Length: 157
Image (cartoon, rainbow, N blue to C red; front, side):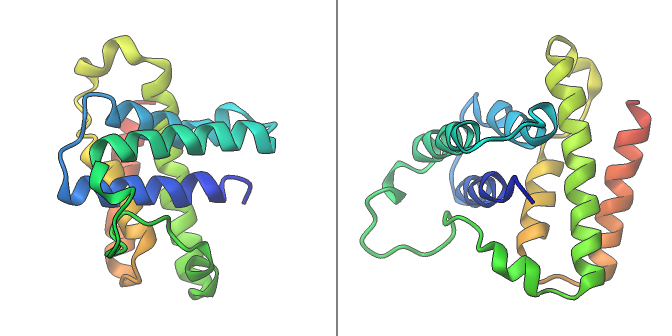
């Protein structure tokens, strides 16, 4: 998965938002980062690094004390993607479907930025999905989230 570094950093930003207030730019950064791998099919190291740095910049604004913390708690750390690859194959497939749904919804939102108010999508669904992606969570909960994302996706396509 080319976008591993982006997803890993994005999960760290979501973790920062669990204990800190988002800025007015946080949702936009999350949407852009989710849409990025699909919008830019020719992902190269430079474009990936630029997106990751944008995520880090936002995370440092959301949780400024975490940058130089001498006792890191791990809440804002990048996600270790090896945990994803160690999960059961069925769980991996469901998590990838969740990620793809989030990316497709994010593309719609990114392309229709002027009408976000009309879309009535609670952006917290992205934070929930990315958190679920990072957790060792039961299959049933993942399937419920996937169903919720599919209902959002189909209502806006």
